[in-house]
Structure formats: C-alpha cells, structure tokens
Image (cartoon, rainbow, N blue to C red; front, side, top):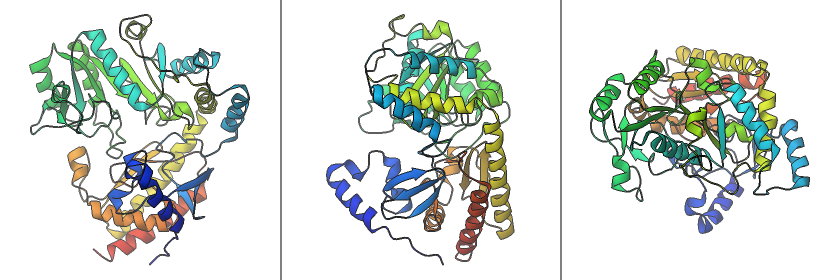
Length: 435
C-alpha cells in the first residue's frame, strides 16, 4: 500500500551498537522489539520533525518521551544553553539558576513549598519514596498496577495473583524482601485500596501513582478517584505521591494537580523541567521536605543535581509556559486530532478507542473501553505493531509500544494535525481490509 522507507544506515548502526551496548540501546523503550522492528537512529530534530541518519523525515509524536513541549531546538532554549556553555557545563556547587527554577515550580504548584533537584525521573520517585518512609516511619508502599515510576527497586514490582496482593519481583536483581514492601493494586479500583488500608493501615507510608497514566497509554482517573485517594491517605496518616514526571507542566501549567484540583503531599517531576536535558525533581510541603539532608535525617545527594545546563534549558522552557495561551493552543490541536481520529474510527468501524488528556493521547487497539492495565494487556498488540509500521512508513513517528503515550508539541501546526488524521485514515483503512 505505502512506500517503504530506506533504513540501511540505521540497520548498520544498530548492528554496530549491539556489539558495545546491551541490546544496542541505552533504554529498552527504544528497542522497537514490541513492533518487531529494529530501531531508527535519529540524526537531528527541528520544530515538529525528526530526521534519521538515512535522511528520512518524520512528524514526531514522541517528543523525546515528553519533554519537548516547545518542539525541537526552540530558540529560547538554544540561546540559554549557548550562554551557559561559555560559562561552564558543571560546577558541583550552588548556582542562582537552581533557586530561580525552584521558585518558579513552587509558583506553578500550590502543593509545593520546596524542591530538590535530581537527574532523572527514577531518582525523583525513589527519593520521594525514601522520604515518605523516613517522614512517616513506615515501610510499605502502595503502587498502582500499570503505573511506571522508573527502575528503582521499590517500584520495579509486579502485581501478585489477587485483587490486592503483596508485590512480586518485577526484575531479577530486585530482592524478595524489597518487593514485599510494595503492595500492587489495580488502577481506578477503590475496593482494593480500601482492603489494603484495612489490613495494613499503620504500616503504609505512601500511595504513589501517575494521576493520569502515560506508561500504559493515556488513561485518566475515574470520577473522584483522586479525591478518594487524597481522603483515604489523609485518614490513615499516609502520604499521597503524584508521579508527574510525564504530566507535570504538560497537561496544564500545574499538571494533573491543577486539572483535578488535588494537592498531593509529594510530587515527582522530570521531562519538561529540563527542557530536553537530563533532570528530575521531587517536591512538597516544607514540613516534609525539611526531612531531607542537610536539614533532616533522610539522605539523598547527587554531584550533577541542579546541573546549570539543565537548569538553563528548563527555566527557558518554563518561562514560555507561564503564558497559559500555550495550553489553550495545545488543547485546540489535541481536540482537533481527537475529533479527526475518532471520526476515522467511526467511519471505518475500526476496533479501536482513542484517549486524550490535554496534549497526551493514545490509540488503543481494543473493541472495549480501556480503564486499567488489564484492559491494555487485552489490546490487539499485533494490530498495533502493524499500525505502527505503516505510520512510520507514512512519515509519522510514534512510540513503538501500545503501552506508551503520544505527545503534541507547540511546534506541530494545524496542517500537521490534518496530515496525521489523513495518514491515520489511510492506514486504518488498509488494516481493516486485512481483518
């Protein structure tokens, strides 16, 4: 049906990479194994587009997995990075820029008084968990099935075989005892949370979740679900942790907290606050954050935390996001894309459902509504893989997994949205003819 892009150089680059890098990639999400392809090696990005080493051009909905909300190479960020490069890339000492970006984050998030910078989302979530345990003097954590919080041992845990069970090891290297301190329950399920608190109420340090999921595709919380979690944690003396590494500063300026008017005790951030540079942060109310060293007994440190290059890129990005017109623009583009793809699905009577919250979206290949991780696992993964390959060959770059979110950047134009809708129709029509 569609032309096949030439990827000879990417194939050669991957073959060489596998000799020196485990699996040929530095993060499993890049491996393309879920879609039975080899990864595409990117040379550069500009605006809404990526260009691979074979010279192919793609309209991009990965956004480097979220942070490129302004698009690739935005002039505001390039200018700040260039100026900082002249001064130095790292000092291992305090700079004023760290305070400036922390102050801006507290301005955007009413639930935040203080911020500790780290270097990744994984560092942010594992540090927040350690702080929650230290502050409450409790050991157990409730994690929601399908929510991914990085590869820290406490959070790299799978569900057991019941509605609400102690976790099992999600990876070799995670000890059994570590897994047993994490309780995994289904997302959007109140009964399971209630049962856990009935059994372990005085042992639970915190509940951690993606308030809007992105790591099993985009699924929003059910009606008043976040209010329920806020109430039950408060009643039991546990902390509520929002992992907004993906949703922070993207769903709204104040993230999911602003959208649903909920104030968690701790928040984890990343992605956008680095403006494309490696960064993470955890944050919360003064009385909790003051438990972090050097003020308090909970130890956490990092030589490159608050790296001036990352801080400059992040601050330049956040200053652009102070203007709420950016979010109105992203919502308008998202709504147009949603309407177009839903119309394609209806017109073709295609077995798929489209989810969107703000500038995040996922097309699930399922005939039924998708509300939790089990629903996502029941999607037609082979059909998704076929769809992915056809879209790539149509010049549309997407996450290579049914279990991931897509992202819209400010750089995407109205014409880009229309092109995406048209390509989506062509591909779905072709796939429907094979069903």
